Image (cartoon, each protein chain N blue to C red):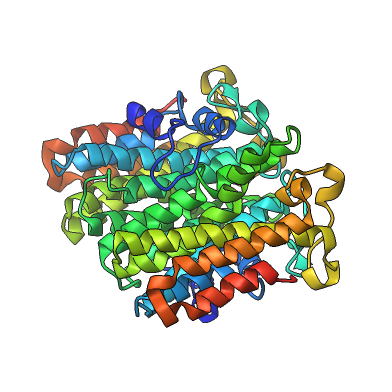
Length: 286
Length: 286
């Protein structure tokens, strides 16, 4: 995946492209390479493994998904949004370059992601590619991740109620994790039941991921995490952990891990790594 | 096209979307509906007509292309980029809403555009859809429009030479117009010669469009144009018109119109409207 990502973010222009400006490509690489947990591509590759559908094409889909995730981080970090200076232990793209370049680097990563799926280099049935593109766009767009960020910004002035927080988080973080888990089933042409189990698994671990994140935000060591922490506190940002407390959050996490594991039952031992991942997400300390 | 665009930008969530935040959708509609020349979708629909390939699906592709164009305007207008307050006679999105919402509205339009092509609602062969998505992404991405905007920003501090200006403009404005003209050939599965003629036609009128724009920027009435004019002057922005003068530009425009018309010869009378469009673009006063 890392090699594939580095390759598609190279300076070499593809057919139909004119030239790739060096400065912009450097900013895109700064935002996408050498860092991060790579959780989403990992989940995507593991979900494909359930169906013995691993292939170079699936690695390209995983790299495209990571591009979409990294674009969202670059834009979320902008001064007009969350105004973060540090990401993955490095200066954010607008700090290392400038705001305009960061906006364009995010735009570039998002655009490139769809080409990476559609491209003739991705050897999959064309109907599988369009299904992936549509599902990814819906997870990432105004009815998913981008909409979730919009709700998150609105939450700074009008704190949402509990169901508002759940919707916001399902969109902002959940939708892309859900897509990652569902994508293997799309690639493999799995049954509707299999696809929906994986989507629900993704939704459950997405929720767990967010709960763990909110817990961490109260307690973690900034040196370990590589980004500013406790920063949601002064703004009084509403989170479920803040609403119900850390004990409740730990119980919820245990329930979500059990639910996630149960959803994978029909896949037997093949799903062992995905089950472990659910536990890791709930217990993570960074 | 307008009805299709208004429909896809509605508040109603699609399958796989969670919910569409009202404020974000309003900003996306503000940036994409009720305005603009609609040149790109017009060219796309006309290029499809050459092959008798008009269909509701082609209208969706045209609307997707307009979403990509409008996303680029929203982001280009941002304070960190060209910092424009007025667009199409209305406040720009970041003025009517706020910067964060404008960034997300652009992101949302770009993402939605790819879903509009890939979606099962677009009744075209899946291989045609992936070819369109790949070509559009390459025209719009770091090797095309987004890269062109990046070069344009760099040009403010380091004025490019003549070939640098040509590349910049081919990327920033030309690439999407070229895609618009080529798209009809992709939809129709035309021959390589037909596709390349349309692509070259698009490149020629893209260049004409930019020359006319640079001429207008020196002379036009701001009330007629609906955006600030002469604004490239104080910054000393390099344009071919500035380099070679207005007379040269008028001769170039005449040459480009002749070249564009010649490229369409094999299509006979069917291409009459595209030929007229080339003349209109060269002569336009707004």
